[in-house]
Image (cartoon, rainbow, N blue to C red; front, side, top):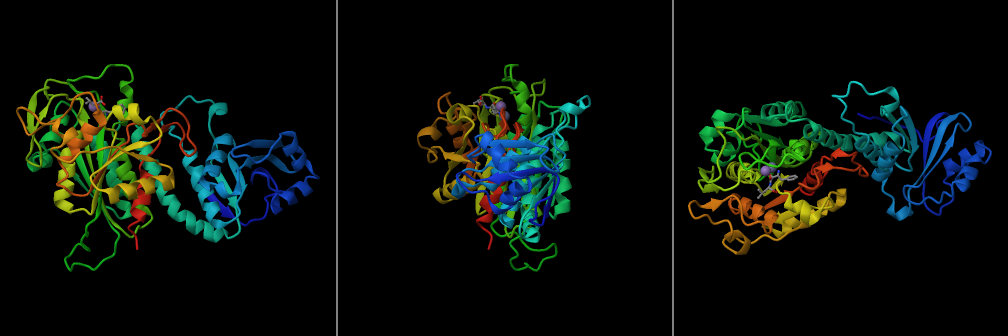
Length: 494
Ligand code: BES
Ligand code: MN
Ligand code: ZN
């Protein structure tokens, strides 16, 4: 994890220094002073590199004066400046330097630069034992020189909690399925108790007793036991209800996650090519847990609950067969025609449980639910399905604010158009429609298990894992959804 500190605005005199420079602007005062101290070498180098300050443009000076390196980083037009992205660019440009200093203009920018750098500098290296020294990323410390370093520290404290949530999610999503199976996921979630979250874990016996028939139909072929984890954050601070055990949750926000720790497809087995990707079929659950960690870590003034259904989907002699009929926690019966449409079976029970137990103001589920959403939206937007326009608008706005974007997709009312496809000849509902509109029929299936509550479903199959580096996300697990849910929750704080 990148170590962050904030220092007085004065220029450091040595080491590696990053100078953020805007487009078509005079050198800012500290850069001008530096140029003077270097007898004009900075301006000369910028001219030689045809540096104009265009966004993400770079020019470096090696060993000028007492410095090891000075890197000028273009930040584009001043009114389009994104401090987080600048932080990300620093981490991307200087992975091999152990310590880097950067100049920020104000405490708010300073905190956001640090946040962006921290997110972009994320690494998962616990299983690498033979990396050579010259292959290793080394960036360990970022010092941000800013007016108001104390204020920057205070602003960063909040972002630090969010970054921790994102990193927690990325670790879960990156772990291989032999290490991270339902019980292990649940144990790691329990570790979040130290942030003040209430965390309860439900095992096989309890889930059987509750009657989680659709969720257990997914896990029954696996040697790994299922788990459901319920995390509660009581942050709204309303009146104590008088009972022991503290305040009562009042119409909390409910976040629900698909946690398939590995999805082979079950008896409807997936093809071999690319099946390894299905270790991250728990990214929805990962995001929910990471978002709850963020809310608790920054002591958000909001009531929220996170519920994740954790299973492994395997083929075996005890696995569900296509054609089997099972009974969901809601009481509805489901004909399972394809055991690879398993995420919706997990969510059906957890959604209905969330609705019944918590009477949430809004329910939002996150799931790597369909390959079809990748066909439709690629890797730019997650699919948003909602039965409530206000909720949809709030989520879209939250997503825009953190650049985790959502695109709204259609959803029919129960009994209409897309929904009718799910009527089964033998049970109340079947778990797949025709091939057409696969992401939509998946959402329609979920809608039958939300008790008519305001609910939204985010299909994050295209967003949970990046094949390429992004501005704040090194390739691999993105942690998509954590910052989005955190920003969404912010809209409900006093
Ligand atoms: N976990 C997959 C969806 C998925 C595919 C996520 C690729 C990320 C990348 C999901 O459980 C699944 O298998 N969906 C099927 C549904 C079909 C059987 C109706 C799909 O998308 O093919
Ligand atoms: Mn599947
Ligand atoms: Zn799946």
